[in-house]
Length: 450
Image (tube, rainbow, N blue to C red; front, side, top):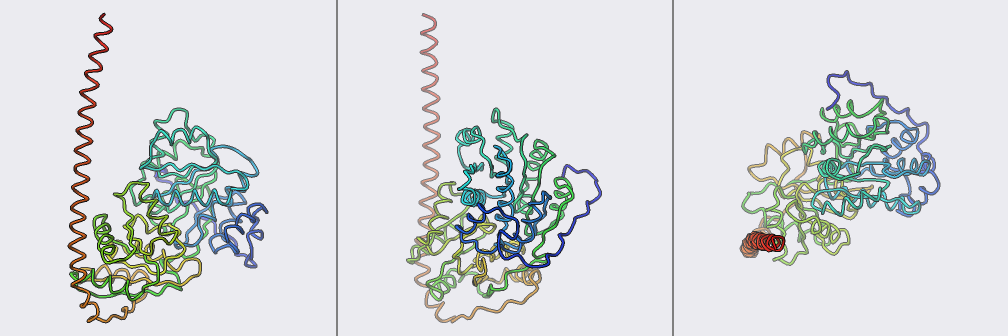
């Protein structure tokens, strides 16, 4: 990034612990924060927390490499809160994340862990009114959790806001921040924050871009790696089903019936297919809810909260939800559309079998997806078994599914027309306001002339 052609820094490896710590207190976490962990139900530290927290408390920069669902947020939040206790200060830490949902979730964890010490956080993401965010920043929170684009917007345009006193920078899901082409924004942020700070870089994968960022942003970091190769958790049962593309919907309904009583996350490749499939399933009586990038921020959070509260048992999502979201009770992940990037498969299936629980994942493979599926098997280093199916039972569903598809298409058309008419109304309103303003302007001029 901003580092030019520097030689790669040596990355120190943490010394192996003689004995596995059994509690957060053993890691050096202060009593008040240990109590907060206990209240959250965090009984014992995860592997990445065991590796990273003691090193972070010593004041070292960290590169944390860990599989999804491994407790990364606690690994950086606890050392930051402990440092804040020792030297209280506003605008103390900045956490950069790739998605809005992840930002809100990290904020919730900071507030839960720091509730007894009065920690204030602010979430700065797109899709929310900038004026209210400017007012929140003026109150100088202890921790800002932000997506890079909107933060740069405030740094450039919000009067009086700067990060010159910042003590901690965290880049969570760094590989994805860079994959989403936030490199320019990250460069701008690195230029306006103090060089004398602690930096924690957390990532599921160590890509070339992440190595470059490490050289630009970290000083003599300690590498805390829980798993260096791509892998899925041990308690995850992974299956595939090979099906003709035109019967995908029928197979999906069959699986939801077969595994009824579980909670499902179903991944689709586009916003449109996510919406269509949610409508299709609702027409068949399933409690399905969509989550995708074309929904407003409030609706996205609403969907997520309904699913978390178990008011809905099926969440249909694009890859906006494949990384970092901590939804404890997902029993089954279905890859309705196979991911085009093999690494996304690991993040998607990582939504289940979290924190030591078991879970299932089922990937739909059509005649067009064979090569993508083979790449996934090659990446995870295992051949997946076929999910047991009763073909004749699937075929018995096709008539009902075809009818639900018709209804879903009609609803999609109606939603599209409503959206268009709303946009037209907005244009008419703007035109009317323009005319009104001209008239008002004319009247004012006349008054002045008299």
